[in-house]
Image 1 (cartoon, rainbow over the protein chains, first blue to last red):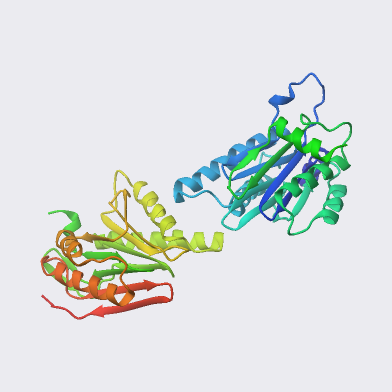
Image 2: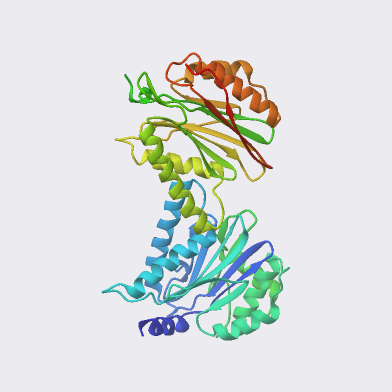
Length: 217
Length: 204
């Protein structure tokens, strides 16, 4: 079935993982480029959907761009109607609806991406995973892409409900490091966080470098 | 004659201390002829939100069903009720989507938010909001209603006192309007629940 191909594309994609902490959510991903000649600062794997929600993908890059555009559209439509930011669960549902449609419509193929959607709303911090089939779940911590099984096992051992956002960021980096090929630095990973301020933001390379130094080698 | 004066209506909403009240007359008329004395113009949207609709009766019922539909879908989808504020925004959105062929209504939304703070909002027929913290009135009797409200209203009234105030305002207000009256209903919404009372009044 086409979805199996989609899932295979996802599992070939760069690892991405997310952890829901007691006071926020972190998502991280590796940003491996085929050649060192590409300007890595121009590539963005973690994107903002609305002020309060961001997401990361594993799989086919161009498919993600389309989903991102559609997700932003749905989020803005929600805001237009209710004058309130879309809750993370609703955002994940809207994205899942779109992805489901592409498993059933004629003349299209399913999206070759899985997503981790992170945000903060009236229910507190939230982390959702959306798959090409249109299934979606809320997670405490999850990973997608290459090596995601190993990363999940690692997260299972490390996770606790009371973990703080700062600790979660460090755990996320450590987990990513486990299956990382080559030397990890501030330019070949991306980190997105959202805390009680309900503002999702992508960390700058300089900020990522601080976390990497903290962990040491 | 304005289409807003075809059936006649009088509505008030008032804020008290951790409570709100909404009252309306129950006349349904066709111009100067009264047809029915038990018309409903206030609709409960959820446990903490009321919608009052003045204006053309047929549009009142169409819109009431439309808003109920949107609210119920939202409640099923999000597994929570709309807050009064979000509901008011929905009202604005729906009304403005008929910008160039509007429903002939003047809605009032009132309720208590999550912290039991009163929320009052009125809009015009195309959804322009007017959020107040004390009282708001609408309908054919709006001028006289606003007058008595300005005179009698006090801040932070307890539910029973709020009921008395809003009732007297409505009764006095509709006496100066020949298109509304003929019975009245008052709902008082507190954090503990809702009390609904029908008022005995002049039937002329």
